Image (cartoon, rainbow, N blue to C red):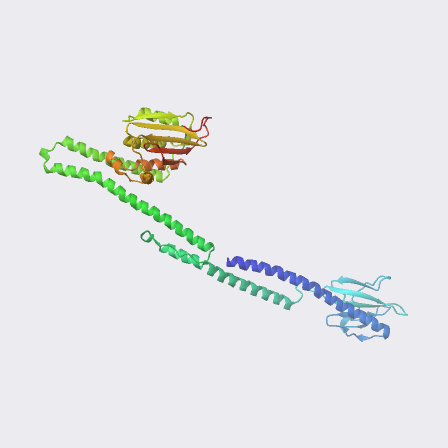
Length: 443
């Protein structure tokens, strides 16, 4: 920022200095030419009054020669001219004077403005030559030095001011950086200081605090998930260990096949938990294996036909409702919803597929006791199990519905629990594929 400010200041100073020098160059040139013209006019006036010889008094820097009708130098400002005219041109017969730039005039150095004046005399016309050096582009060395010094001073002051302003402006940012560097996972509740001024720095601090809030929430969910996973993993391991230790106390009196079956049940529960945890890990990592166009009605028909359920399943399917996604994951979603519905249904499960504008809808409805509205978000939390669910299926992992919702999110959809006259009504909504044909809206 300081370099940019200094560069801009230098460019502005260069432009202004150029304009000043150009303006002064023109004025200085006009002034010096006027000096030469005035000196020539004065000498022409004096020649008419009395003869002039010898050196002439003119302003410094002006060179003047007075020539008689035979072009002899009879007066001038310099004695070293040796009687030779500094110019050879004359004004036209109809003109009193003319002007030219000679580089250089005869006997002089450098380019000069030369003015030739005709003076009428009885014995013939006399001529006056007045010369003045051209003004250099920088006008004078003193002016150039002043302009350079002033420009450098302005650039220095602007740079110092920009440095101070940037340093003062970024001080809160540096404080926020230091506070963020000091925040660790063990001190995640700490927040950065929000400046009082309502500016971009304040919004940065508020955004950082909002990010820290989300990180805290994620850390809390991770801690809760780890705690719940540890507890659920420990239960089947502890049960199997207790069964084996009890059997080993009296190995001769134990029916080992019974013990093996009991341990096997604990291992099956452990395997189910590990499988669900791996599935959640894959979903969290968004491991996507490509998409295909899937007909939801066909998917439901195939899965219902090949699964053996204890409750009657009644499908209500609209043909041609397609989505783009991962078939295996959508099958897992449907299976989890059916498993949950079978666990709580009394005798019947209704599955409905239909189109709703640009969304494909899949609904699973059981005829059980339903889920209270206050618990509808709780059932989608990992390892969360309601009392009724634990009673009906003690071996459940509490991960089926969270997995189903994560799959829905991966497909850009939602999985919610909506109101129903009886039982729990799970509704999946996913953006439809482009292969849908025309059809009625709604079940």
